[in-house]
Image (cartoon, rainbow, N blue to C red; front, side):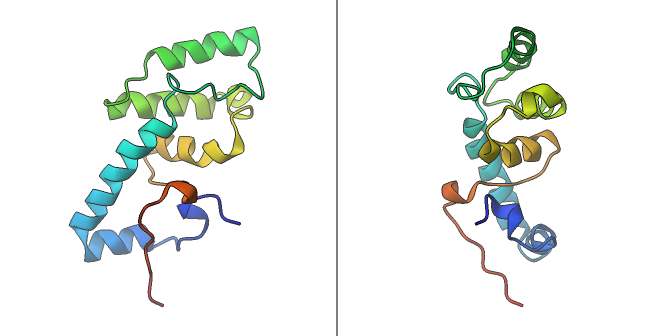
Length: 124
């Protein structure tokens, strides 16, 4: 089964949408950023309840978390990048959250399938 949009969409889907329907592409990207910021919000959920962080990891994570402001995209990206690039913390992040964190960290656009409201159809 697929975990997120990028695990089944063709590699050129985003560029095709951007070329053929730039306003739709911008709307989807904006929706993605706003909606998914809630999915990575460290102030609402303990991502490490099942796999606790060590004291040292927790200290680093608290530093990353302190900078997170949900309506400021640059802080969301910075938080996600810090988590993704901290191997000890990232490996303890639940698997279903990893693609969303990676997408934010590196400026991508990805959505968990269970949270998608619109499915795109691509003709061959």
